[in-house]
Image 1 (cartoon, rainbow, N blue to C red):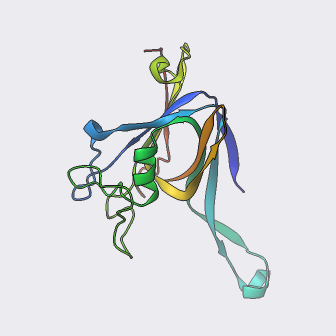
Image 2 (image 1 turned 135 degrees about the vertical axis):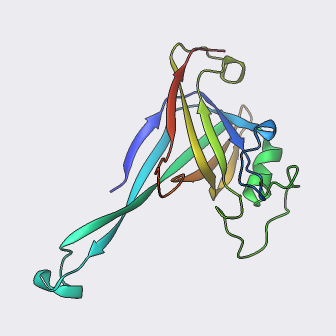
Length: 190
């Protein structure tokens, strides 16, 4: 069963790409994608494998146990200030970072591996940076998802007064050894 919690907004949303040849974060190329206006839903979805046994009805019965197989997190953003040029690149897979951001519309080859190919980057939610959010907070929360990528496309809601860009990221565990889905820290305003 998914567990939902909300990251209080407003928050600056940053994406740091990984080098496709090494998998290392390229911090010099981190981009502020925009500012999320309200609470950001972060839904953690644990994954389980059912264990079937004859004494509980076999394959047609109920599981006799379940084995934990990890978790993912789904982060739903609604950006009110946004960098459309970089969002367009993420939407088409152009976060495929090879010495620089690729152009919008240039995707990666079919069958390309997301994690092994270095297409996952670090998604950071930061409510402490008043320069981006226009709100200074004491003991603000910074949340990092070290292995995240755009899983579902976005939509632009444009009105006469304001525009918003909805975008959904999916985050995976960092490794099968440490099993870290995200980190949380608290900081003072910058």
